[in-house]
Image (cartoon, rainbow, N blue to C red; front, side, top):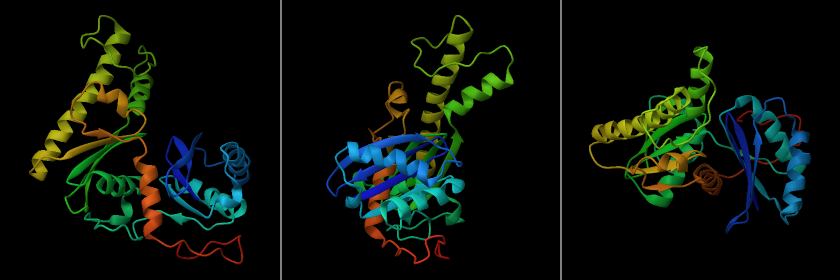
Length: 269
């Protein structure tokens, strides 16, 4: 079985795949201060509860946009599961070209989304990922990664609005039935939600115009279903896209061996 770890800015998702299906998925708030032992105690209990034995974990793969969290996630794989993880980075074998100026700058999550989306749906396409940031990533018909757009995530926008304007409260995310708000909170909710719908539809139109032909729009991230209520632009919603990208990446690359001295990491890592 494969342990898959997707470490984002807000949450870390742990999942186990048995070669045919996902056996369990668990989420934890991201914290660079959390140690490998803290992860281990928490995760082992959940894995056992799902009917999986720790010794059944034969490999691991990590994708992270939080460098500070990587050390303890690696130690988790080594000390609790006795495996050396594959760490997603641009220098691995992705099976496609990364056609941007500096491939090592692109976040692993964006490449993972591109890998899984093209594998499942074919190109050309654009992946819209609603995370801490909202990203749009373009993949051509051959699977090559062409780059994309990074916009502030909706939660960041809400927090910035609250922090910068003294009289505006912090609001929750939801779809307003009316665009015109008749008081402050409905007006804010409308601006946030329908403003984001405008951003999504406007950027998709401009991306397609620049690319020169229609693109499939693959939406992922926890807020994708909410925004799907307000637009018809999404071809499909795939909540497990990044996890499946990690699984596919692990099939293309060989994990490094466990070092004899487990307090050190290979220089290539």
